[in-house]
Length: 127
View 1 (cartoon, one colour):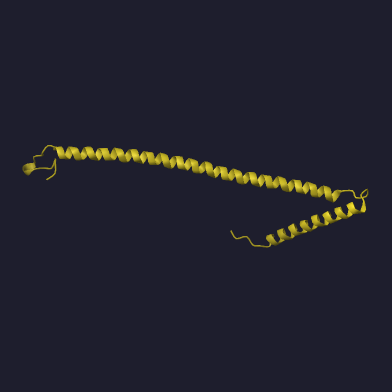
View 2 (tube, one colour):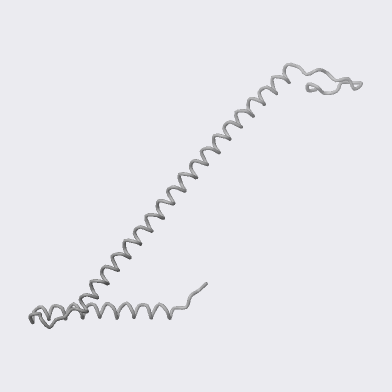
């Protein structure tokens, strides 16, 4: 029979040393487990924080790259617009030929972009 269990006649035996030692060990193990659990929660929390910081950094980097790409496209567009609007009446024939070639390239690229956009709009969206 274990400690504290009833004997014959319903009389209870006092807790012995073995039971007290077992309970002390269980309590020590529980304290160790609780401490370890708390440390694991802290680690998980700090890993989550680090992970979130990294995710924010990646998102910011992508946003920065997209912004830089937009600025580059806008600058190119301004340059192309200037080329298209240039007055060639005072230019030499060689300069006029160069400007005309550049204008043709700009027009072709514009047509290609419009063609791609038209093809994309004919693709059905699956939601």
